[in-house]
Structures are given as C-alpha cells and as structure tokens.
Length: 71
Image 1 (cartoon, rainbow, N blue to C red):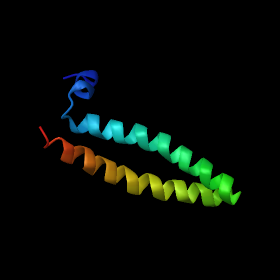
Image 2: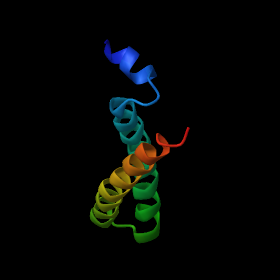
Image 3: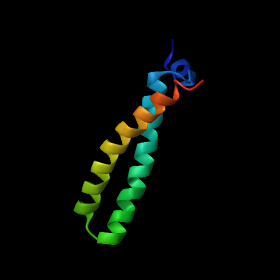
Image 4: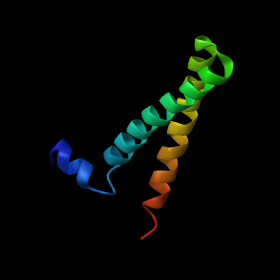
C-alpha cells in the first residue's frame, strides 16, 4: 500500500499520526507566538511551545484513535 493510500484510509494509524503532527506544528507555532507576545522572551516562548507540543500531540493522537472505535 502506498503512503498516499495509507493517508486516505481513515482508520490508519499513519494517518492519525500525520494529522496529529501537522496540527501540532500549526498550533504550537501559534502558542509560541502568543507566549512571546505576552512575555517578550524567546526562551520562555520556546519552552512553552515545546511542552505544549509534546503533551498535546500525545493527547490528540489518543483522542483520534478512540474516535476510530465510534462507527
């Protein structure tokens, strides 16, 4: 099965991982930008973004997998 076919399979673990990753990158950049605007500190903004990325990536992936049981 090709990578594109795997991404089109809505119950695929690979699709869930790619969706979680692309969303987390977008959301983390937004969070880091807001943190920088509030604190004015790049180091603090990067730390907040990094923590947020890891925690929410795992949460989203788990959420996505649970939804695959709902039919």
